[in-house]
Image 1: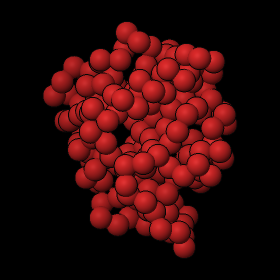
Image 2: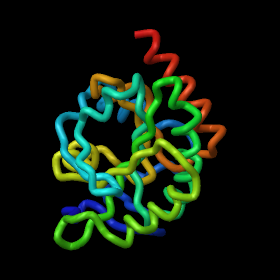
Image 3: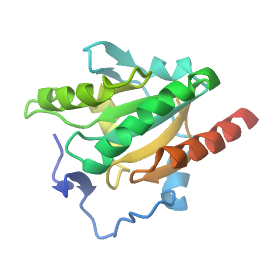
Length: 190
């Protein structure tokens, strides 16, 4: 599914290039933010863990949506998943959604069944409002060209525009809550 520009290392996806990828807890570089902020996510059609169709209209449901690119084979992704699921409940009334975008596909480009089972196992432990979809080609073309590694997180407004800062690496629940509050405040100003 990936064209040779990516590799799996330490259970996570990494973009092959000459640049070193920072794993600190700061946002992605301002250069990357300028490239993406304001860009529209575009049209896509994907399936969620229950095989329901999901389109770009999912962003209309909330003022702000945290979008987290993940893989079930990425330990940091799986460690932060329960925190993101909890935050999906806590921020529901503030019109903030949490959307996981799973990059795990089988050799035919279909959602990987083992990955689906692993994600359902984690997400079913607690009632939550988090939705996880499987990467689809249009979405992949848009998102993977700027992704250095996963987990990779950014925010989308209700119009489908990428807003605010982008984040590389996992965070604690408390860190994500602070980040969501900051991004929600910025979106509310517009």
